[in-house]
Figure 1 (cartoon, rainbow, N blue to C red):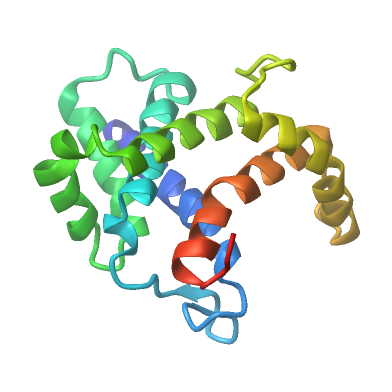
Figure 2 (figure 1 turned 120 degrees about the horizontal axis):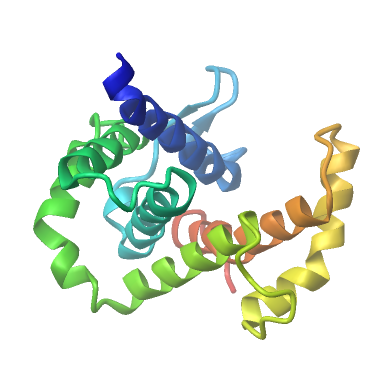
Length: 189
């Protein structure tokens, strides 16, 4: 078991990502509150190039900066990614794995993949303090204005919350949650 800790942590990261992806689906047919929070993503959700770009870069950044996995073997990195995918994808990771193997080289030039990757970098940077406080990224500028609102909501729900968690929530709301609301829940811009 000692040698498969990275697999366990990959599954844990997959669960954390899935939990964050569920939030915009509250109150929709895709998230059963009565059934223990079972998530049934819409068709094509994990093959959406924005979603895939965001998930893949979040996992890669976690391997590199949180797990200190820069020197991991390619096999170990792939195992970590596949374990995260196995939690995220209701098909046991097969759909995400097939996308990774067959389409990722073509996707890297896709505008939505690039946007998802950029947004993942911004979100990760905010989560782990890797972005300068005066970064002029338009998402960050707006998120800084909205962060106190999210901080108040978290505290009001008894979830604690501080300025950074408010900023993380604001960035999430302006990026991945907005993409989900517009593309899967019919929200207009």
